[in-house]
Image (cartoon, rainbow, N blue to C red):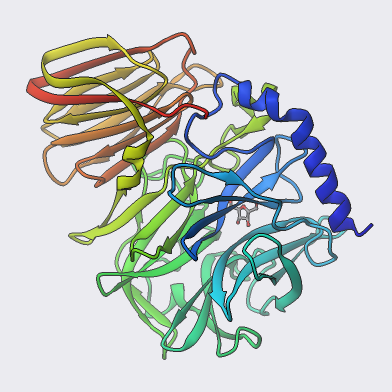
Length: 472
Ligand code: FRU
């Protein structure tokens, strides 16, 4: 049996052994994507093809730790009901033996093509990196086509996470990179036929970019257009915390500008964090058949107390965010829950004004909408959101799940707080403020028996609460 086949068999056995324990965990999500067992990280190969949405994911089926990653695969027709498909990629070849690392999907020649990084480490821990291809005629079974791009000389082997797209009849690929002087960067490659790739250079450092000295590695780059502007989304590592910015171990954010494909240079503005919560990393976008730019993120951060999460004892760790539509508003990316998320609602349990304050009980899979100026919101005696109108400052606080010490993340709104939309799912919380201008994504390990919601408002605020689909 080939090593790929053997690994695949072992992964299915692990799922069969573990999946009941995993899904019965009180913290296992009711409507978010999470691993059938083991560890899930980055969203990969995110695409819609022939009406079906495909979301692949970095997956370690054998333990709640990182290692030689597989590509797991979920599919959906409606973005709310998902099916776990057969494993798409297994790390069984010489060029990906230490992991089929992150990458993207395109459709070409009536096939789905996955570009991913083959991660290789030798016996001394020395890393090699290969950009590889796998193809499928049905979007389910993939055939590996081997190495397509070797490491260009100007980068260290921290060279990974290809995102491929088409522009003006040519194919382009961005890759997260580290220059030889250990600076984070993005490489642009070009191809006319998806076979021969030319390295066009480091777009992120062109034209005196303010980001020439911005961390030691950039992971998971993504380039796309919104309203005639190019957006470069990436996850830099090595930034120092700076006031309310950059407080997680690693960040995810974007710059907006214009990509000059001829000159291979990108003129852009300042870096903005895309999310303000405790757990968010490595997002990837696609344009769906309705023309919407939709983002999925990983609700985790590498090296950030990942392995102190209480789900580990039940054999799983991490989950995805909900899919979100991106819009460009006044030079900022807004993230909005998709209209499809309304289909998650099973029952409306509150609809009316809140005067001064509200205290009640809610389910553990819930959507809460508040229209007006909320001053304070407490959830499950664990997460607290406060708003300071004089500074337009929104702050999310929680006890750190490992040591119990209070910790906070904040964001400044461009206008007074007028709306909040919360998605609560057992052990996660996504907060969309002012129609997605500011988003906080966090895991939440509150006592399972706690169902309390407390809200304090200025004057009167309209509130709606829906119970959402739970583990169907
Ligand atoms: C980001 C990342 C990627 C890499 C993958 C490995 O979280 O480190 O750069 O491809 O995860 O799982």
